[in-house]
Image (cartoon, rainbow, N blue to C red):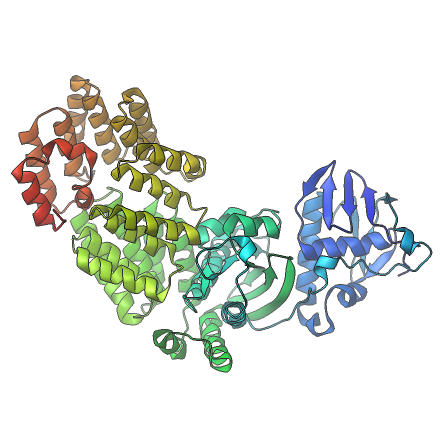
Length: 626
């Protein structure tokens, strides 16, 4: 390849302009997000438009000599990302032409805007941007992604310019790219991303924090620049990669990027049978931990020493279950976890996932709590019997104990889970529920914000902050928290934010607005009875007694399989001033062990009953502080 006579510092082609000094690509003046390797590829192609740049030359210029094993995947990924940014295609190229088995050619007209005077008349070599001067890629086995990566990071200083206060190195695992092009593989690949997050989060909890799946998934199919992602999430390092799955074989490539200068520190590729992934990760983790003297907990070392394998089908079913757990239809998640356990009866994570699915049904008022908690408890205990150092399993048991009114036991399990994995956002989230129930509002808010540190873009956590502020009687803050996340939550069709807003607007005496919000919650939930009952309460406090009683009659006519939390009916009668009837319904809630009765002592709707000795006695029997 012959280079042009001058190194072009800024060039234009079609509607695009590239500044090779700053490393920026713009389309009609608007900056296009493009990561380092695709941009370096573009710079090389622009050095000699119209000429073929061979694959071998690209390997020599863009990849060090010791990385040729993973070169094909790396180059193909870089070309794909570059074409996506330019709106180009391989079938009908406008800018980048593929010459099979030979290389690539830039075929559009290129105009130099400001050639560098210092380079006039000198041979032009490949463009090397200053901020990329330390870029390199190293190929390592897949287990190194989850262990050597963490071991490497915990020995690097925290960068103060990112403003982190946690005292930990923070890292994000971005959604892995589906390199197969098969949309049926999305569940598997998204789940594999979550497994990578989980594996990293449990290695060196005191020093390494890993952003949770919900926030990381906000960048799926996006072209946002690494430095912007770093600012969004408060991280110093990002892991990204791609997955190809065919039958029982899977190929995973991953690379580590340092946010501050977008340097590619290293990368790896691994090709194995899907059932061997966990075992290989464990083997490599143990070997690397010993070699670099990483301070891994004794429980984690024992876990690494234990043979780790899982049925390939069970692994994929579990990943699908965790993916659908964040969707409105929990029944689908239950089905996936049950099938995973059928495939592999010793798969601890699947038991934990199934337990969480049942407990969540009680938490959301979807099912009678006694029945679903009876299903959930043995599943969480089985998960712990299979793997006592699994943070997810301890969190599952804590969540069950919370709604079983075993508050001391729940707190013990939450703390154990967070000792094992402080990055596990669900543990922070659900622990905050316990602290709210006990009136420990400052601790609850702190726990919620710890969860947001590891999952800053999770709408359910942002909504939870509003829920906390409602019970803390900070109504303006509650509205601000929920409004901030409402657009994201609507995409997942969650009714909870509308319910919280309805409750808050009731306390603010904006009854028409409250009634409208409960209407949204009813619609989004498919007419879940708990939200219908809350609408009746809003009608009652607004003075529309007839409509409130009509709705109560409607709830009483519902089939037995439609669960109506008794404390919600009690709240309606409190609003109607019928305290005797309200206490009868509260006794029913106690007798049936209703889940949300844990919040009785902080719920503003019951404030008028607090002077009654029967209320204090009920609070005592539940086990809440007086």
